[in-house]
Length: 283
Ligand SMILES: Nc1ncnc2c1ncn2[C@@H]1O[C@H](COP(=O)(O)OP(=O)(O)O)[C@@H](O)[C@H]1O
Ligand SMILES: [Mg+2]
Figure 1 (cartoon, rainbow, N blue to C red):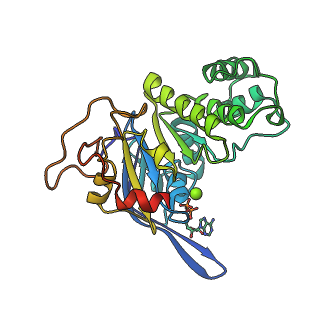
Figure 2 (cartoon, rainbow, N blue to C red; figure 1 turned 180 degrees about the vertical axis):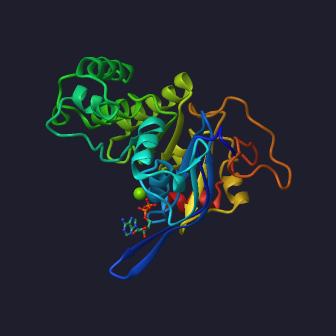
């Protein structure tokens, strides 16, 4: 890790307190997202995936452990400074799109630029550019209700992109879409990763989605699954080489005590084995 990482989580826990009851949503997670990374986060419902993504996106702070954006520990940042880091480093895409309903596409996409103090004309120019880059140059004035689900998610991706973040975080971005629109959204994320070198991190419980990413980690009960299991999960040979988001060069299996999960690239072995991680994640 180090300052080159976009975000680095080390020993991170997150405890929610509701009516005096403690929920340990994350329990000692180490994860690094490097520049240009391509990562899928899988795991059963309630395992802590959204909590982890929220932390990686600076939407929240860990209860304990350290979290650093480009080498800056969030513990040393004020809330305003953290918001600024978030605005500069992170683009967030939600399952439910989270668009302002009465605002046209171009206004939704330009919103993050308001916090940068850009004038209206400049915001519009950049928003139009971002909408064109997701294939929606012909829908600038449409409000969310006038767009299909897939189009709304592409507007949300344009909004995430307009600030030129180092990292796009997407929490089940295809979860509310039919399979064809979901496919288009994944193709779009793949293209953005390839063409812009933006790191893409996607939460999904769909193995078919996960297999298109360079590496996969599995969250279970607030912890990342043991390293070998993740390695095997990523070792079906379907991640990486065949995925449009994957790195193009397959690498030999890691020797014993091989790379930590934060560095794990695509690994090729046992192509037909369906791992426990995959079965559980899909069940
Ligand atoms: N804001 C919150 N307040 C209290 N508990 C929460 C909150 N957010 C999540 N949790 C709990 O934390 C655990 C992990 O939730 P979450 O990260 O949403 O899981 P996932 O995205 O994998 O379904 C769950 O038990 C959930 O009920
Ligand atoms: Mg979730």
